[in-house]
Every structure is written in C-alpha cells, then in structure tokens.
Image (cartoon, rainbow, N blue to C red):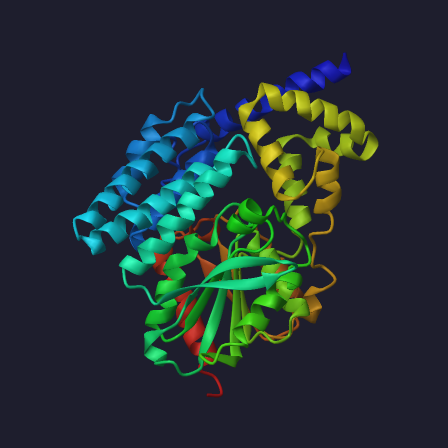
Amino acid sequence: MRAKGILAGLAALAMVSCAATRSARGRWYELGMMADPILDQVLLFYLGEAWAGMTDVNECLQTASRVKKNDPDSWTREWRATAERLHATADRLVTEGHDLSAGQYYLRAASYYRAALHRHMHPGSSEVKELTERKVACFTLSQKLLGAPMEVVRVPFEGVQLTGYFYASPRAAGAPAATLIVHQGRDAWAEDCTYYADEAVRRGYNCLLLDGPGNGQALRRHDLPFRPDWEAFITPAVDYLLTRSDVDPQGIMEMGLSMGGYLAGRAAAKEHRLRAVIVDPGVLDWGAVFTRQLEEFSPRLLSMYRSNPKRLNGLLGTAGKLSPFLLWGLTDTMWKHGATTPSELLDRMGSFTNVDGVKDIRCTTLVVDAEAEEYGEARQFYDALTCPKEYLLFTEAEAAPLHVQTGSLAVASQRIFDWIDGEVGKGR
C-alpha cells in the first residue's frame, strides 16, 4: 500500500508542480503558454535567438500555439513542421538566385530543427538522427550563403571526428588571434552559440563552436554521453587549435554555458594552456545541483535511492508512464548520461563535481551569475577559486535575470565581451 501511495504521489507531482508554478506566475518573463514551466523557458530561449536572426518572434509564437498540452509528441511535430516549411522556402530561394534570403531561411530552419529535438519523447530514435542531419545541413549552408567567415572543421576525439565550426576574424587578417572555444551544457547545441561567434569576429577574435560528449552532435551523431572529466574533450580541442597558424597559442579561452559552467571549470582545472575561462553560471558541484532539483520535486526519491535503488527503478519506470513530463525528464537525462536505470543515473551524477579540483584552476576566470539563476552556484564557485577571478552579475534591472541570460543575448554578449576585451588586452 505504501508503494502505491508513493506511486500515486509521483504521478501527481509533475502536474502539481507545474500547476503551482503557473499559479505563482507573475514575473514578466513567465509566459504561461506551454504545458509546463520548463517548456515555457524553452520557448523563451528560442524567442531570444531572434535578436541574432536565428529565429523570428512570430514564427516561434505561431509554432508554440499549435502545440497541444495533452499531446507530448506535438512539440516535436509542430517545430519540425515549421522547420520543414522554412527549409523548403530556402531551397526555392536558392533556385531563384536569392542566396542571402535563402541563407536567412536556412539559419532559422536549423534553429527550429533544434527546437524540435529540445523535448523529443523518444531519445536516440531514428527521427532524432534524421533531424540532426537536416539541422547540420541547414546551418552549414546558411553560413556559406550569409558569407560568414566560418570553416567546418574536424576535431579528433577518442576515435571519432567531432564536427566543429571555426570562425576566423577578418579583423585579424590571418595573423594569430586570441581564440574562444564555446560549448553548451545539457540541452543546447554549439550552433545555439552562433551569436557569440558573430560577436567574437567583430571584435577581432577567432571562435570555435564545438559539441563535446553529451552535447548536440556529439551525442546524436556519435552516441557519446556526458562525462565528468571534460578536460578529455577540451585538451584535443586545444591541440587542434595549436595546429592553426591563425591562432595565438597564448590566447586560447573557453566558455561553458548552463551545465557547461561545471564542465568548463572542470576542464580549466586540468588543462593549463587556457588563457581564460568563462563559466555561465559558475557551478562547483553539478551533481549536487541535480540532486537538489530532484529533491524539490520529491524528497522521497533520494531517500529511496539510498535505501532501495531497485525499488526506485521500478517505481519511476511506472510513474514515468503516467506523467509525460516525468517520462521525458527521466529518459532524456538517462540517455544523455549513458545510464540505463534511474539509480545508475544518480550513481553517475555524483562524479560531476569540482569541489576538490577548483583550487587547481590557474587561468583568469570570469564567474557569471544572474539574479533569477536556478541551476548555478556562482558565489560558492567564485569563493572557492584561488586564481585571478572576477564576478559578473546580470540583474532584473537590466532585463537579464535568467539562467544563461535567456532572452537577453544582446546585453549578455556585450558585457561578457567587454570583459574579454579588457582581459586579453592586459600585458599586450
């Protein structure tokens, strides 16, 4: 009877937590358009990319309006439909000789293919791989037609060739330039950072956009899940950059966004050829962040994990079938971490910590925080650093209080690159 009671509670928790969030809504950035608050944040994420021409506002709003709250597969279906419509338009514009317009359509189509995959109810399916290839093709063609100074590159990593995008700044005119590696975290892709690449080349820096294990293409093309030792990925990326004559070997920087804030900090603790690292947000212990979120969802889950992991596996499997939100969160997170059961996932999350290693970071570190940050530990991370460091807070007063400055890309890129300008300029 007790197990049935817990099961009933879990089945209702997803609906209750979403309803509670909606009833508490009142902040200006809470849209209230989608079935749950996480999808609301995802919608705002893609609305924010309109600033960089990567989406268009009404294309996003129209697509979101077609998503059915009681049909969890409709998110992917409707974003795919929008992506395919723009993809077809871009193809037609190419035949008509309108290359610039076609490039703009391809760029937005690529974003909508990514959106279709943001909450896909069947991780690792053939559709996931199909949409990945369409997204890559649209993005690559968009950069060519738009005249971006971008080169598709291959970075060797443990027997595979990771696809990256190297943007060489025209301002450097081929001379060695400081270079920024940018990667995401749990959900976004390297291509979502295109606005950072654009800003980098405008300011005279090169930029390498690259997915590592668990990110975008690395996961969907090569089946590489997340791993805590992010230096295993960053070191080959640095090695690759050092083969290029247009890269200043003393000016290589790394930026990690979202869960990438943990990953970048972990890499910087081991890879000492970095000139600077930017963590947005600062994260000292990603495993602890994950378990805190889980405990807010249900304090019983962690207790059951510690006392009876087999029971937890069976209970969550059943509860997941009753709640599409829980089902997606469970299967997607296990897929991205290479786990086959919930207890195995929790086992693995414990290794995503930099509590002991943070003291080994030597390069100058920018720790980014935001007033409404939900997934960071910026102050704890900043306080634990012993290297040269700075703390950058984004606020509600400047309309940028959210996690990774969602919806505030203009002010985010300006303030972060102003810091880079000042840091890279020191001693030169």
